[in-house]
Length: 86
Image (cartoon, rainbow, N blue to C red):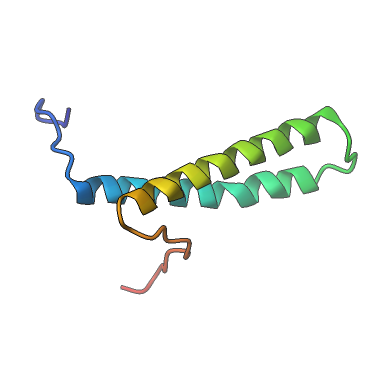
């Protein structure tokens, strides 16, 4: 439902945009988890193991989102956004 109470019409282009947004979200969260994991001095502690498992899950989500893009006949975009180019 959208703000007016009517159902959103999902077009192929809209699904493509949402799939690309999912790729971006998953891709851009990875560095934060990796940095957090690498900042822990004790390599074999439970915190590192938990963060490593989260990283694996995020990479799986990234692959699924990229596969969805490909299934929708669009290549996933892994380029960072360009800010201040207006």
